[in-house]
Image (cartoon, rainbow over all chains, first blue to last red; front, side, top):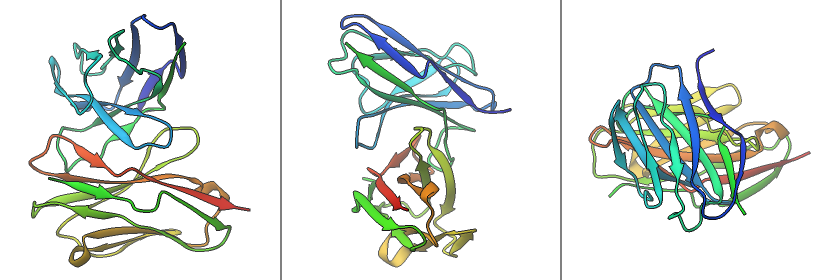
Length: 114
Length: 114
C-alpha cells in the first residue's frame, strides 16, 4: 500500500532533550512537508523540501531542524531550543512542490514534553 | 498575500440535517487552486477535493458537494443528510502556481449529533 508513515504515534520526552520524529513515504513524491498543530488550531508549516538534499524554512522553523538525504524520508528534529514543543506533528508529501498539488498526510505524531 | 478564512469555528447539527461549511479566500493570482481536507478524531488529514480557478462547475460526490463562486471568492462545502461519521475538523486550503506550498484555513470543527 502506498502512503505516508509516521512513527511513533505518541512520544514523550523530558524537557531539554532533542527528539526526532520519523516520516517515510513510498508514493515517489518529490516534495515533503512538516506541520505543527496545536489544540483547536490550524496547521502551521515548519519546514518543507522540494527535492532530495534541499529544504526551506516554513513559518515556524525556529527550534526545529530537518534533513532530506533520501527521497522517501524527511525526519524532523525538535531541539531543546523549541520553547513549547508539545503539539501534534503532521508530515505530508505531494508529487512536486507547488500550490497546485494536493498534499497527502501521515497519521501524525503527538509529542508531549514533560 | 494569500489568505483563507473559515469563519465558522465550530458547528453542531443533528444527524440527517444538511450542513454547509464556508470558505472565503483572498488571492491576487488568476490561476489558483482550492482544496478541502477532513481531519477525523484519529488526526490524519484526508484529502477531499481540489478545484482550479478556471473550473467553476459545482462538484458532487455522494453526500458531499462543493460550490465554487469566484464572484464572492468562496468555495463552500455542503454535506447532505449528515451522519455521525462526518464529525471532524474540515480545512479549506489555497495554492497558486507561483507558490511552493498551500496555505490552510484554521478549520471548522463539525459535530454531528445522533
